[in-house]
Each structure stands twice: as structure tokens, then as C-alpha cells.
Amino acid sequence: MKVIVIGGGASGLVAAIYASLNNDVILLEKNSKCGRKILVSGNGKCNYFNSDFTIKHFNTESDILKSIINKNNQDEILNFFDKIGIVPNIKNGYYYPMSNQSISVLESLTKEASIRGVNIITDTNVYDISYNNGYVIKTNNGNYKSDSVILSMGSHAYYKEKSIGYEILKNFNHTINPVVPGLVQLVATNPLKSASGVRIDANLTLYEDKKLINSSSGEVQLTDYGISGICVFQLSTKAARGLYLNKKEIIHINFVPWIDNFLSYMDKRNKKIKNRTISELFDGIMNYKLSNSLLDICNIKYNDKWDNLSDKTKSKLNKIITDYEFEIIDTKGFKNAQVCSGGVAITEINPNTMESLIKKNLYITGELIDVDGKCGGYNLGFAWITGMLAGKDLNDKNKTDKS
Image (cartoon, rainbow, N blue to C red):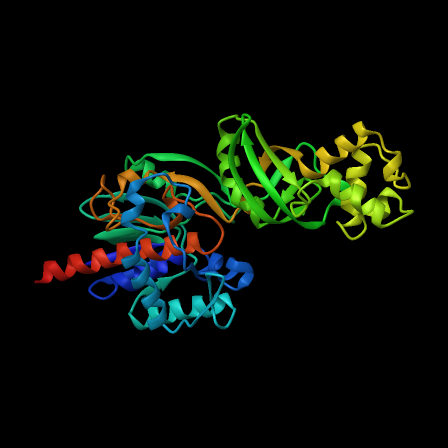
């Protein structure tokens, strides 16, 4: 069987390798090299999986996901990486290659594809696919024909241009759920510009139309446009979905989560460390740029004394420090997003094979599907597994046809 895989990213490479055992496989990649997003994952270290790879870490609410994300598939894909030479370095459940270099993962995949006889053709941009007694793939380098197609074209995330995969699938009558940026920085109406660049461990809660949606803890980076950092990314997908629906998104931040009662803490600190200004009392508690910004909001002078502040002013400072509200109005867009939320409805795909339930011998993998997870190797893990399932099914199909 002649199989064409479109997209040389995470799911496409794995799909091509698995499908190549009993098929003639061509992989078409639009860039000059495969795996561009693999190289930047995990800050160049490639966080390629997670030991707690369960559906609770994904935003998609569907029991169908259990057929994809399960122990059997997890064990098989990890065994696959072991066989192609990747030695895992596991830190707090996060899988990295022992080399701590994304290039190790990519080179192992492309080498395996080469050994398996996959014909990788780069600098080939697909702009249309039609069906006429087989699939016809139209590209800038001419047309290709195949019996089966695996669409692994990726989403809008990270690239300047938008993925054409959604339009191709629309033409095959697939439902495309609204696509928004995920795992991305958030833009606020009231950024703390004077504290831009400050990083601080904090607790965050996301409210949508005044209803608690989710929470996250960890390092937050303050920027001149809003907020960034991994714990912000964990909330960003839900915020982006809400913004798309014109809902009001507010993120509350506690800048001192390690303090149970801020006012009591400051009273005790003021008594213990005598003759200090309010600014000096904050020394050792948080970055001075942040504390000064918060004092400015409360109209408190840096040389004021704690005892001289009114109860009303102290109450306002307590609110600002333990429950600062960022009104989120936008994300930093697809170019800065690690993934997308939205895409092909998972209900239109066979979860055991990734074959379209609408069009025979058309397979859909990775980011094109309306499934997205948290930071931590979940999205790459989903890409590997869906590519594996698609490639395996085509391999098994041809094996059955031959027998």
C-alpha cells in the first residue's frame, strides 16, 4: 500500500515509522528539516513524556480519550523510544533524554525512519487533497498519489502561518471545533509594568464570569503586557476558550502564598525588626520592584512606617498582595503558543486507529485533533501515541490484505 504522511513533526515521524513495515511510505514536510517543534520543546531539552500520563491532565472532556491514553499505549510508546536508543532521564515524573538535548530525540526518529525506508521529502508545502480512486495530494512540488493519507500537519501553534490541515479536513466534511491558542502568555488590562521581568512563586486562580474555573501554583513572570510562566500556561487554555466566547476572565494572584495571614505577619515583622520603613520591611519578602509597584497602587510612600498606616490602607495592601486581580483580555497569539485548543472533533475519529469515521483510509493525528494537555510532556505524549496508532493500523491492514 502506498501511504503518504503529511507533516514531519512528532506524530508524523512516529506514524511513518510504524506504517513503513508493510507499506511504501512517503513523508512530506513543508520545512527544510523535520521536527522543528520537537527541537524547541522543553526549552531545547525535549520533555517527551510523563510518568503520570492520564486523562486528568488533558482539557478534553471525553471518555473516548481513554481508548488512546491508557497503560498499554503508554508502555508501547516508551518501549518504542527505548528501541530507537532514547535513554530516559526522569525528573519528578518528567521524561527527558539523558543527553538533555531535543536533537537526540529528533535524530533517533529520523534515523529510524531512514532505516525503515521512509522517503522524507522536505520543502514540500501541501495546499490541497482530493480523492479520485485514491488520494491526490497537491503541493508546490507537484502532485502525489496514495492509497492512504496520514494527516499530521500540526496546528496553528508556534508558526506564523496557519495550518491548512483544518481546511483540508473541512473539505472532507469533518467538524472543526473553534481553535484558540493554548499554553500561552496572557495579556491583561492592568499589567504591573514597573515590575516587568520579575519572577515570583505565587498561587493563581482563574475566574470566568465570576465563577471559579481552575487554579495553579508555581513561578509567575510579570511582563509589560500581563503575565507568563508555566503556571500561567496551565490556566491559559481555559482562559483563551472563555475569551473566544466573550466571557470575562480574571486571574487572582496571591504573591505571598507562604504567609497564612499577611496583616498578622507584618505586625509581627514590624515588632521584631524595629525602626524600618514599609519598603524596608518588604526587603527579604519579595523583589523590590514588585513590592514598590504594589505600594504605588496603594498610594503608600516607601518611607512610611507600618504603625502609621490606617486600617483601611493596610486592608487595601493586604488585598493587593494576596489577591491581585489581572483582567485578561487576550493571549499572545498562536505564534507564541505551545499548542492549540480546538480542532477536529474526536468523536469523528476511531480512537483505536485514528482513522477518520467519515473518510476511509484518511488518518488524523496529533495537534489537528481537539485534544490538548497541560505542560509536562502530555501533548508530545499524545502526538507520539496517535501517530503510533495510525501507523500500526495501516501496517496491520496491509498485513491482513497480503494474507
